[in-house]
Length: 133
Ligand SMILES: [Zn+2]
Image 1 (cartoon, helix red, strand yellow):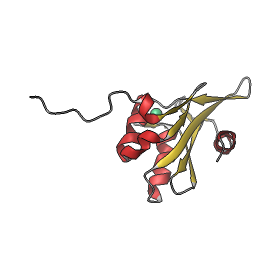
Image 2: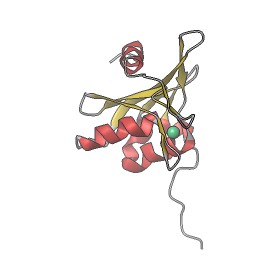
Image 3: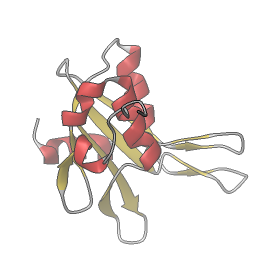
């Protein structure tokens, strides 16, 4: 699946909601192209007790179907004032989560701000350390 198709797919799940506590939900969305060929989407959820990034939300949907490896991931946010989409790079927790669910995900493509990178390039020093001598 082409990158612009993935971005269009994830843009369709954005649904910004400002709750009574001033917290935003659904204003960032993510799509994952799983190794099974299916796409999985998710949105961010921000509550006083816990927050979840769109990327991990999409990955949870993928894992729910029994798939742990993915080929591509992209997250987007729409600027309400300009109505323009922005591609967001995953935060550090999401990068580590992507690696931890299956180490082969280090070869997955991550669409970022103005670059496309493999997950391994966004997680330097990710190898398990050797024991001390
Ligand atoms: Zn994140």
